[in-house]
Length: 172
Image 1 (tube, rainbow, N blue to C red):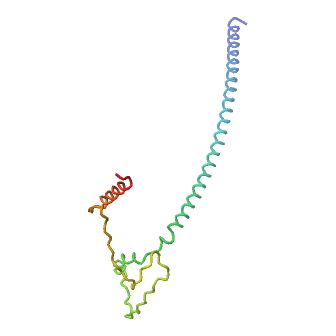
Image 2 (cartoon, helix red, strand yellow; image 1 turned 180 degrees about the horizontal axis):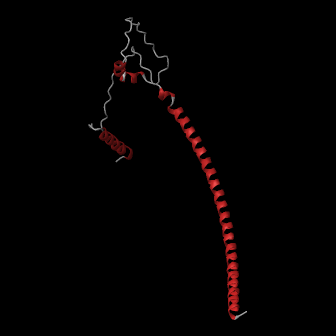
């Protein structure tokens, strides 16, 4: 073996050593990457579980909202339902002209019904009863006493009466 072959052989040995060290380094990098990948997959699983939990809560809240909306509709129907859906005959008079234009009324027979007597209300009336018509009525007027001066204003009358009361009670 000559010097040239020995130089090539040492060169090849160095290259093999550098390849072995780079292989060792790449295997350690591979292990680090595998550990990072495992941590990432665990984080993804945790996030998916959290997402599923949030979706379940969202579905539960939506069901609760639907139930509350249903209850609200029932309460509104109870308050404003049937009585509000009825048509008042007075409202139909507003549209009578329009209805007559769309469909002219059929001629009604000329038979007039007899007017029905108006019935007196059978319920008791509230409040004070009326005085009998045969009760005699007399008008009486009352004059003010000596110490009271007449005034056009009721407030002044009250003040005059009050001042008189105070002077009588205190003696001044």
